[in-house]
Amino acid sequence: IPYSPTEARFLLASDPSSTNTPHLPYPWLNTINSIQVHHIKKYLQRKLGTNGGANTFQIFINVKGTKIILSSLSRLSDIQAIWPSDTCVTIFYAYVRVGNVA
Image (cartoon, rainbow, N blue to C red; front, side, top):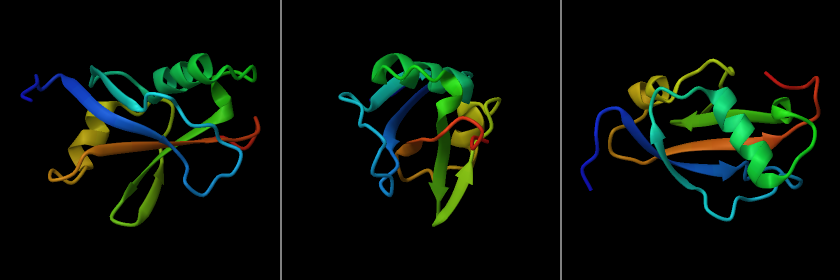
């Protein structure tokens, strides 16, 4: 399906190594590529019903076996720029205690 260069389609998945991170019922998202990671954290807080605030999630990507933790100011367009073009963008989240978040 063709889409605009300003759009982003990605999979928002829970950290596969975390035993206490809940899964989203609908992990595929479509949005504009200029949103920042802090918007994703707020989305997760709303959808998963956490009450610890947006900083209770660590957001990261895994590129060629390297885990890259994203800052709250990272943009989806930045992620798309480094993502291998032949695969779907997958952004992972893990539920963490406040104080242990990047």
